[in-house]
Length: 485
Image (tube, rainbow, N blue to C red):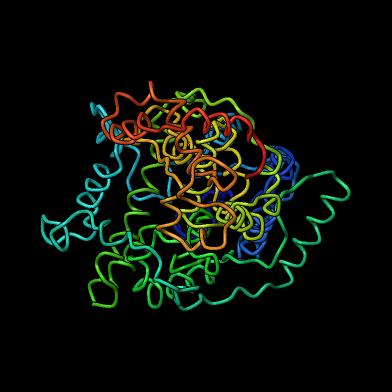
């Protein structure tokens, strides 16, 4: 049996043909020279590789490049980026196999997508549930409804500082983590390799055992609380009841289908409510697979999409994760979460970070690259459609039906951030004007013509035309420019 070369996001047993298959791992230093990654992301990847190298039959080669590290005939599963796929195709003696680590096959997705005028998550998700028999009772969806989102959009409990979900098993660092931390220090001091974000204790799994422990704990203790408040935010509880499994799944430590099966088992035995289980499975079987397939299905130049002509550079305070420079409480806290943990859940990503970037007209490709580099679960395939298409609406609606733009009222309803903030979410102009409320109207004014044909934007655009202080608001936002709010 041939040696299997595993990339650092292919570390689980489902990437092998046999448990005893010999494995080659390559730790490429050039990867960390090319981009300024979050320090904790670099630590997670290197620690995962080095822990996997402790297993029998595994060889770890440390090299400047992958080409230097692969010096024998190997097979490798289809990589997760176009650049890596191109590299594999150019390397002699390397046989590329079909992709693993996702549920729906590329051919199934292409067959489903062919001839459709639009590609929408909801349509794909229903297809995937039927195709793979997930949460199905005969030919009907469990509970009689495909989509239970309406049950999963509650604001945080009134007056709560924390949701109260049991904390997951803590990560205990070992000598491998100590060695990784010391080496990253040397890279910074001696090799000029630059990172962003704070170093810190490792928060996410790097071994199969750690990942399984987290999965079981989530299903048994957190999944029952997950659904109702999955879109809510609390300043004192960044984890809420979220699984925090995306880094482990994206490192390949967990097979997404085993995660889905564990969640469905909890519903079937009455341990977790259907709405929360459906919402969680939608994230993996639906959204995760959907953005993976869109990365390959859309043309390579999709990443450069910029239908709204957003041309501003990311300001330094944002690029450097300088949360202390920000006065808006929601943005400061979320940016600090990225700085200190390399992770915040999906609503801060979309409605605080992405929403602000879209309102300010930052270049979509730069925003996607920032998410890729600064999140521990960020990869090019993850962030391309997620950020360019959904968050920034830069593809003009090819995979999302409207821009995810919102003012301070949304943040006020779904979080406790507005209490104690220097800005008032109800005020759009003046010293107390919320930058999200002002930014929302400024965004609509800037793109009124672009959005006029979108029926989902008709009501907001009618509201824009009724504003009596629009000129003052626009002048205020021009003056704000790239300054931290």
